[in-house]
Length: 408
Image 1 (tube, rainbow, N blue to C red):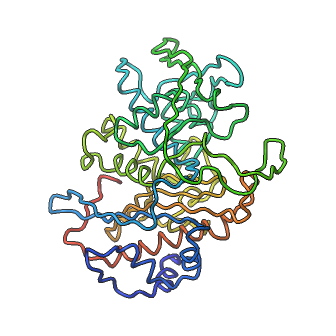
Image 2 (cartoon, one colour; image 1 turned 135 degrees about the vertical axis):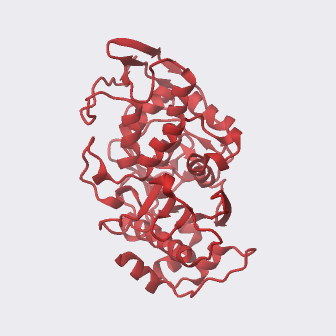
Image 3 (tube, one colour; image 1 turned 60 degrees about the vertical axis):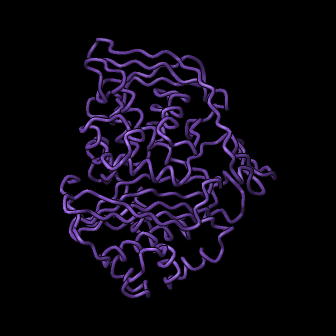
């Protein structure tokens, strides 16, 4: 519990008593005496910190209502979303299975990925799975437990570029583009438009086959600062003294990421047109793995520390996260951009809130060189930001305590 003792000492704003019409998030940030937070707030152009904080209040029937506060959120400002794009891909992979309506086909079915032409690669085995067979369920599990890149790539290939984006657009999530695989060489813009053939089996019986798909999806988003910096490292390890072009890279605004997570955690409070087509069992599956810690998994068995992909509250330490705290989230970090989108729950103290933040920590303005201030600034900043909001939530008065049994 040293995190929370430290956080109490960290915050000097006293008992919160902000009027409802005031921006509570801005008041909290303004009132903190934490030197790192103050330094980041003093340099908005350098760090480009964006924060979304959503309070959750329940009525007598435990129905939630939401009040959202923003700090410095600019949905037209480009940032690289990194692994956060894996979250909507996971949700839509489940939705696509449901919409196929094939008897016997589900997220646990044996998924065989083929290769139509280079640089595509095939997958027939996954030795990290209990049965050594790949499946949608196992890929999603690896995505949320340790942010596995190959697992995301296989879902991207199952969905196809156009399907992935069109489905999100139809739900009203339109300030985004998800147009490439992650951390694999050989794929250019055109190569990412081609997605591998995929087949699903039950035993030796073919349940569904999808051939290679070609998609050409590139929305004309009006985004600022898509060409950034003073240099970048190319694939040969050479520093090129020119700005880095992000115009053909993925993008999802922080608001869209926040709203997508909110939709999967609170489907009944989400307008029908924005919901994902998921079963009750799908939701419970997602809640389980959104919040599971690496050490709690048997297949695969991971050695990563608790906060490996839990940046808020705990991202600046490798200590064990208390059992009564669960964080349902997705993080991303690449090119000096650091993002966490989370629903934080304290079962013991009856606390819940949504928090999303992004920060840019690339002092030398050189991209792809691996020289970023994650450890010095990024992880500590998100951890302290999470603790700041958590401590406020501990003191905030609620008419009805949330009943969170369904999340256990």
